[in-house]
Length: 416
Image (tube, rainbow, N blue to C red; front, side, top):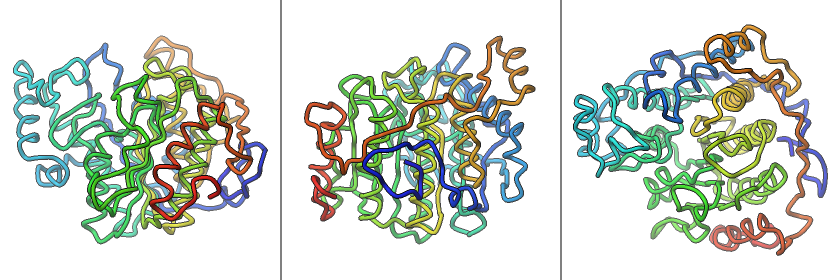
């Protein structure tokens, strides 16, 4: 259901309200071609083409040229900045492997099949962190209400090791920057198909941060974690929230799950800033996952997160990228929609993709680009108020989360 619209028992989520479209915020976007240096090699799923095609699509749609959008060249985060969420020993190990890729450190996740070592790995990874730190600084300074780092979202990186294509955790660093800058509560919303395990674990014992991860169940997908019973450490119970969805979940179930858990907990937690991770690998074309959602639904969730930020945080919102491995059909459109939503200019799903962008995709990558920005999907979903269906595996997943977490926030898992 579109942000700002009253919830209905049944209906369509495909139309955004006019009120949403009129709201514009100063928006910071972290981008430079130097971010393409985060490159695990030609045959690795985490291709820098994802960022190249996203940036080119945003530019040709006119999003980067909007009056309230400011592009910022992300700096390389310093060791001190990285050490706010990573151990000094791990940072030193990344530096060593970065300087000598022939001497990997697989015990720390460096030089593995998922995270191959490459020369300059430290600088490339730290630059992604620098983009999210610059986003946090812009929000703290008040020069931007919204900020986007679509090159970030490295949510599997833990305090002391890399994992799942992620070396340093930029979203965690941005959250810590916000806390250190005086923000009292941050909610982190992760809609990647994979559990946001690294970010969750870094803030496991931190009651000022709520991490909400909506992902394919660890029973069928890496990293094998993120079950409803994982609710946070002592003194922070209820600040880790996990919705473990069954493989094959489509738009209607995905949107129903989001709206049955996320808005209620954000309202109860009352954050001052929303940080979100928009990995788009939940898409039905993604080669690495088993969820079946569309670009249209991913845009809809971005609109909903923007609405939550406006409602509870005076608009303060930092959005990152994340996973997504269908490089042409999915990632550029999903993240161009994210930039458009953040900038207050949502791109219509019926907008044709620019012909020069399509030509570039054909000439540079030898592939046929999508013709439109959307997939003409039916975004109807059942509101939770209709009731719980115990025979529906999505409903069972949602109820498992609500039963574990809602009472910890004074909410009733059946009726709230």
